[in-house]
Amino acid sequence: MPLQAYALVATFAVCSVALGWVAVRIVARLAGGPVRRAAFVLPVLAAFAAFYLVGHRLGIHVGPVIVLYGFSVALAGDIAIGFLSAMAAALLQAAVLRTRRRSDPA
View 1 (cartoon, rainbow, N blue to C red):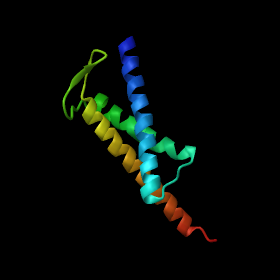
View 2: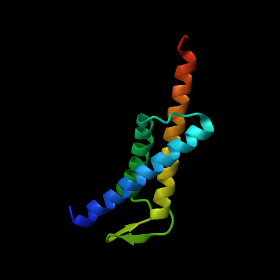
View 3: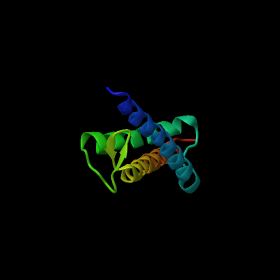
View 4: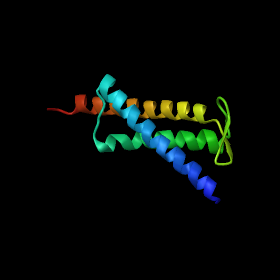
């Protein structure tokens, strides 16, 4: 695999971490979601999975395409889809934890 491919994967990994962090913080503030370190894992993985699925496996270009490290990438669309995916994962995580708290006898 060429060095440019590693750079592209690293760029999307960093974007995934940032998007997952933002999603967890937004859901924590608006919906009472968790903010522990473990709460960040699922949204970050969801964002990265969205990048992988949309950009690599399906080859879908949403929005304008730019050349990044020699690859044609729809960066704005990929980031939007990654953010939506991270938000969905964070909201689902908050809902599951809220349901588990209610069902636990005190």
